[in-house]
Length: 193
Image (tube, rainbow, N blue to C red; front, side, top):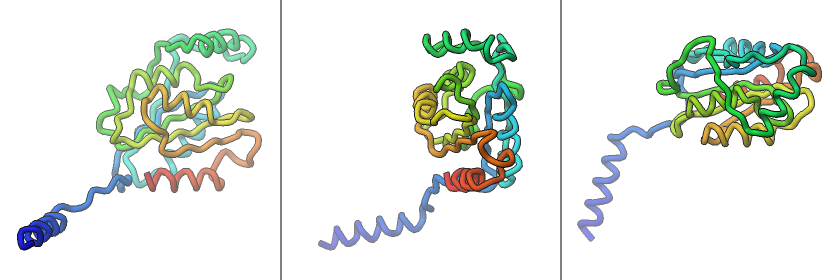
C-alpha cells in the first residue's frame, strides 16, 4: 500500500515537472501554403490567406506543371480527363522552391476541382512532398459546382494524412473573393489546428 502511494506521488511529481505538450499551432509556427491555380481563383485565395495568417511564418509557393495546360478549358479537357482516368502523376515545379516539408508545422494545399478530382499537379505535389503525421494539413478548394468529398479523398490518398480542416470557395456564387464568413471560419480552424 505504501509503495502504491509512493508510486502515485512520484508520478504526480513528474507530471508537474513535464509541461503538457500542445498540438495546436502557436504564434510564429511555420506554415507552407502550396497551391495550384489555372484561372487565378485559387491563387487569389492563397494570397488572401497569407494576409489572414499574420501570426505565423508563412511561405507561399505555386505548384506549376512543367508541361503547361492549355488556357482554353475545351482544349485542355482531353488531357485532364486522361490524367484523371489513369491517375497520372506529372512533373511539377514550385514557384518558391521548397526542398521538403520538414520544418513546417502546417501545410495548406490549395486546389481547384477538375472533373470531381484534384488536378494531377496537386496529386504530384502531395506524392513528392509527403506531409508528416505530426504536421497539420488543411485544404482550400475553389469550385463553382462540385462537392469536396472526392477531392478530400484524393488529398488524403496522396498525402497519406488526414485533412484537419478545409474550406470550399465558390467563385461567382459568393460576393467578394473571400473575407466572408467561410474565410473567417477557416482562419479560426487553422488557428485551432
